[in-house]
Image (cartoon, rainbow over all chains, first blue to last red; front, side, top):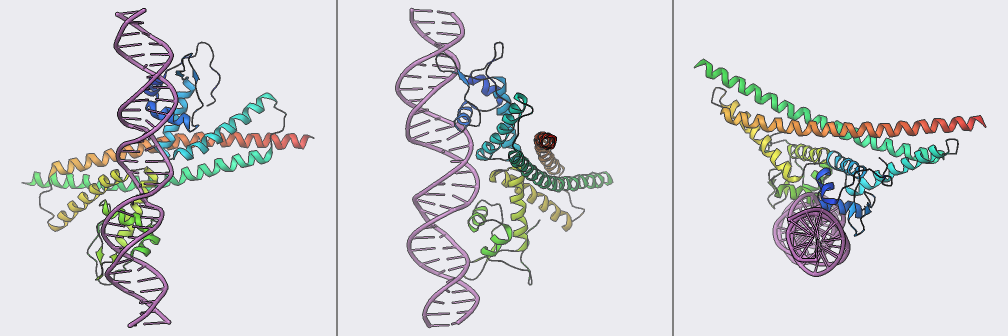
Length: 155
Length: 155
DNA sequence: TATAAAATTAACGTTTACGTAAAGGTTATA
DNA sequence: TATAACCTTTACGTAAACGTTAATTTTATA
C-alpha cells in the first residue's frame, strides 16, 4: 500500500493512461489528489503528473470502497489516514524493532479498525437480507414460468 | 410489499410519526413521493397525508437499499417498478389462476432479477475483499500490541 | 522545427438529494 | 373559540462530486 519514491525501471504513467488503468476520469484523479486521497505524484520537467503502479493500486482500492461500501470521499480520507498511520507504525517497527510503540496509539488504531469491521458487517447483513428477498422473487417467477409451460402442454 | 386501500382499523400515521418510524425526515418522505418511490398516501379532509404500515415498510426497504447497496434514487425507481410489476402479476394470477401469463414478460422479469443478483453478488465480493484486508490490518495491530506488552514484561 | 496531441491551472456549470424558510391552512385542546 | 402545534405547497439554498470550457504549456513526432 505504501507509495515509495520512484525507482529506476518502475513503470510510470501520464494521467491519461492512469485514467485508463484505474477506470476513473482525469478530472476525478486530479480531484482526489486535491483532496489528499492520493499523494501528489512526481512531475516531469514541464509539470506533467507521473503516476506509478502504487498510485493505480490505491485509486482502485479507493473506488472499491466508494462503490462497494458507499463511502463518501470524506470517509475515504479518514480511512486513508488510518492506513497511512499503520504504515508509519510498521516503518517505525522495521527501523527499530525494540523501540517503544505507544500502547494508546495501538489501542486507538485497533478500536478504529474494529469500528470499520462493525460497519462492514452491518452492511453485509443488510445486503444479504436484500439478496434473499430478490432471490425469493426470482423463485416465484420461475414457479410461474413452470406453471405456464404446464398449462400450455395441457392444451 | 403491496400497498392496499386502507381498511377500517388499520393504523395510520401523519407525516411526523411516519418520519419517526421510518427514520427519514419529513422532507425526504415528501420527496420520495414526488419521485414515485412511494404511492401517494390518502389524505385527510384538510389535505394531511395519512400513511399506513405498508408505507413505513416500503420506506425502510428503500433506505436499506440506498444505504447498503448505494443505489441512487433513480436506481431505486427501477427496482420499485420491477417489484410492482411482479406484484401485479401475482394479483393477476390470484384473480384467474388459469389465465395466460405472458411468457416473454416472465422472461424479462427473470432476467432483470438475475441482473440484480449479479450486481448484489459483485458488491458482496468486493465488500468481503475489503473486509479481509481490514481484518488483516487488525491482526497486525494485535501482534504489535502483544510484542509491546512482552518487551514491557522483560524489563 | 513545426505542429498535432496531450497536459496544466482556473473557474464556472451541473446533478443529486435533500435542507430551509415563508406564507398560509388544519387540527387538537384548553 | 382561540391558540398552539402541526400540516401544506412553493421556492430558493446547499454540499458533494465531479463535468466542461478556456487559455496556455509541454511533449511527441512527421
